[in-house]
Length: 281
Ligand SMILES: C[S@@+](CC[C@H](N)C(=O)[O-])C[C@H]1O[C@@H](n2cnc3c(N)ncnc32)[C@H](O)[C@@H]1O
Image (cartoon, rainbow, N blue to C red; front, side, top):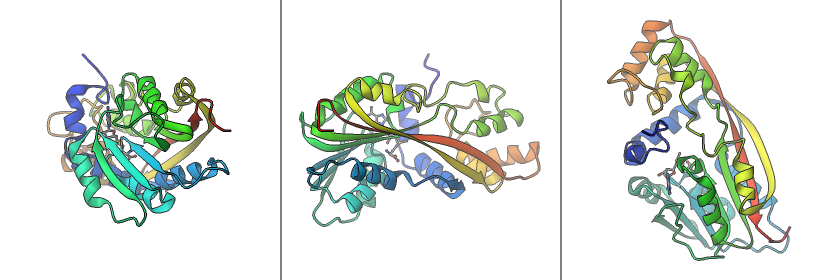
């Protein structure tokens, strides 16, 4: 039995078969965020900062594991590549990405279904590949990274983004203290296979790592109702039936445990910028 829901093929439909869970989770986290650069804009800034002088505007950019296309849209708007392809395993999220995307003059934008272990892209085709918050869904992220390296043109850049193993551990402690899952703080991290501590080494096995940045993001949830909006989307807890996916019921259980109070949490975000092996420095 696989104990990590992010790695369990049988749970991917529950996680990404519809847009609601991801949208609710992102909305709850974004409203709680009090420190940390916005991730899509930071990806663009890193790509611009590490582009060599001789690089022209990017031809093809791939946003791998693009989800609802949040980063894809910012990259299209700010980096203005000739072509941008968002690739994801989830048809529902790709549909959401297509309907959320605007028009970006000069950029051809397409969203394709695909598995990041077998990217639907030719060898040496991408000037920039982005993989944000998705490689920890692979039991063997090194394989996905080797596949990204295969698609990079000579001198092409990859920007890989992940979270620290102990991200949001204060929220695990809250669930434990409330008695809703006595083992909440002992489950395997959702980010176990590709996290801030191993992502640079994984990247270095297939590319030349150019820079690594770690940045703490801080969150302040206004109270237990707000915390429950995020917690109800977290698949790793063993909650009583009816609580997972149900923020109202989870909030009611939290209120029984404690009077309302603000909740703080943190997650360290890691950005690895790497260049195709043997590419320009
Ligand atoms: C947390 S979302 C991240 C979405 C987006 N990159 C972002 O930063 O908001 C993780 C995404 O990885 C996708 N994913 C998981 N396994 C995948 C695979 N084997 N191939 C392609 N995409 C995958 C999921 O469908 C989901 O959209």
